[in-house]
Figure 1 (cartoon, rainbow, N blue to C red):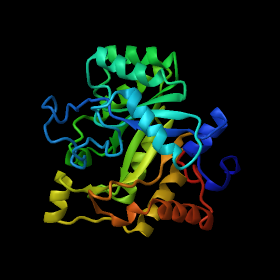
Figure 2: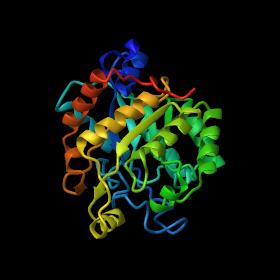
Figure 3: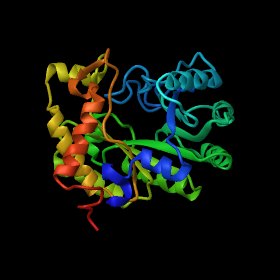
Figure 4: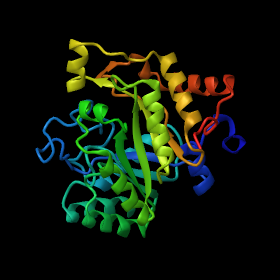
Length: 308
């Protein structure tokens, strides 16, 4: 526990400082991709919770070049604090879904920036063909590549509800293929999906404890305007945790998580102009402080209750 300091978990901040000697900040990028769950290859509606921007609401504009997006993003971050190094984060839509020529061009533009230390790519596990894996391997020889996979849950009923569009073995193959290349895998998990109990959420955490993953993002379910999830919520409101309920849940998840998995996120803040629920999630600093306080008060730390 003491190795992580006051936070009591293996945070991304701790990882970056211990690995690179400094904090790294993410510049979110839009590579101009779409998604097979939107263009008809798998589906047309996208995941049920996904906004029109493909979960890239804070990413740059696809109309701008990657160097320009990086320049603008770095400038915006530096208005608040002096920063030397960055993570280039391709966030919007499915960022391995495109021609190899296009993918090589946008990835190369990102890692060419000397202030970029890591290339992080959000994608789907069913969009990692052999040609894409070869390209990621090539990029990983220049700078570390992280691949973020949107698993959200291991439970197939929930996966069908959110229209994830792939089965669990597809995820398992993607993780195995990436790890053969030495590429770090970060997994997205949504807490509070309709119909999922605490036990079901812990089953997802335990499943990931037994997979070769290096990072995780934990986030509550956001209901955003103009999504099918918002339509469902308006017709038949489902349970949305209070801030205290979420804090208790995420702290319990942390205490069940394997100790060497880097936690990249423990909350989230959807765009205020789109956010329907939970409204409290827009107060990100308040949520983070509440999580820190509960971990200390309950004497919890990452892996305390991990199933061996």
